[in-house]
Length: 232
Image 1 (cartoon, helix red, strand yellow):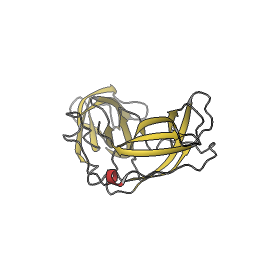
Image 2 (image 1 turned 30 degrees about the vertical axis):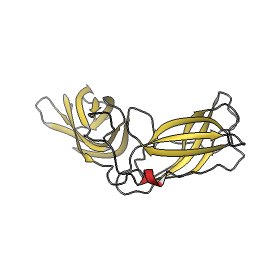
Image 3 (image 1 turned 90 degrees about the vertical axis):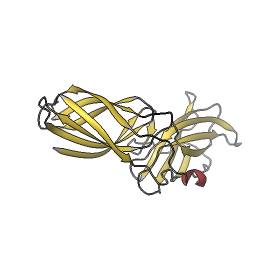
Image 4 (image 1 turned 60 degrees about the vertical axis):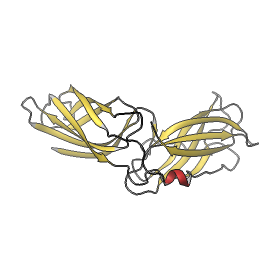
C-alpha cells in the first residue's frame, strides 16, 4: 500500500506554517510598517552540512481503528548546524518482514535528536517500521520569502503580550527553507516596546494571517519583521 501525503512534520522548535490558522487584524490605529526579508539573506545559499537520519522507530499501535500503524520516530543530524529539509519514507512491516504500508512526508527537524509521531496506512498489523530520507530539498536559494501586511493584531494588551500578524509568500524555486524571524513592536513614537524571535517554514507557496505573540511594555502601534536563515 502506497500512501503519499504532503503535510509538515514540525519537530523541535515551534514553526509558523500556513497549516496553522491565524487571526484577523482587530486592533491598531496606525498604518503598520512593512519590511521585506533582506535581499542578501534571500539570495543566500543553504547552510549546514551532513544530512537528516531517521533513528529508532517504536511501533505504539500495530493497527488502530483507522487502519493505521502508529509509531514514534526519532530524527537526528550531526554537528550543530541545521542540515535542511528532507522528504522521508516510512515502511511498516509485519512479523514476517513483509511490507504492509508505506508513507512519505516532509520532515523539518529543528533540533537533534527530535521525536515525532508517524502514522502509516496499512493492510494488516505491523510489528516494526523503518524510515529513510532522500536528498535535501531546500537547495538553491531557499530563503526567498516576501513578508507583507505586517501588523499589530491585538490592541492594548491586558496580559502583557500582543499579537503580530503577517503574510508570508514563498517566491523561490524548489522547496522553501526554514528561517528565524524577529518581530519588533513599536509604540506611536516609534520606540521598540517588545520583540520576539520565532522560526518560519512554509510547506506550500504562501501563508496568510500568520501570528506570533510578543511581550510588550507599552501601547503597541506598529510592527516590523526581519528574517534570516535558520542555523540551528
